[in-house]
Picture: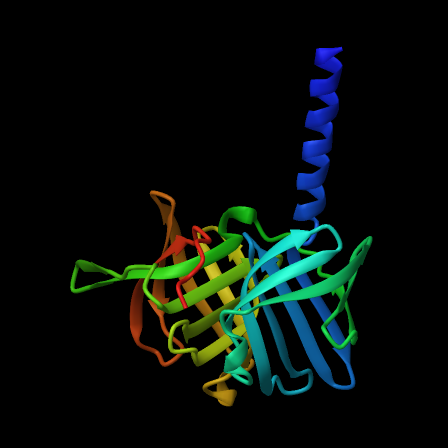
Length: 241
């Protein structure tokens, strides 16, 4: 009997874990000339909106989330259109059916997303924080717990970076699109860029390597400058507001 109870308990636990993991992925929708996407991975998320035709950036919000049965508890770390939401936890009801998710915001407005299919390897899937760079052969480090952050989220075949300051509730910029990793080469195809619309449609190639669990990223920036960046997986501790 004890063994049976333990088996049932373990099955129930892993079922809960599996349900929670079902929200992870890249979710997209297109309607009335607007593309929306929702990236969810490692307890972090971004919700972004831009024009489908020319990639004109419109808005993004994001932070951390928890999946509580049929409700998402989203703690906002950046929202350029309403900084008063930074630090707040918003609760959104959702319905998950196969590869579709319907999310209802506080005004009960529904948003439907479809999960994207991807064959990209999971090696770079996750939420990362910029943690260092190499210049003139020397590596300088950045404390990822400081309120000024640059986060990059990769899931499915989508990527997005966001620069923001949680305590000052400032948003400095974002960009994203689709990506691929082949034989140590990481390629970004930019679909939106808040700082420079002319970068939309550009493709950037970088060499990458995982060293001691960190993502080492080398090549040239969007402005053509050489770079060597180090990104660390986010430990998902909540920032202090």
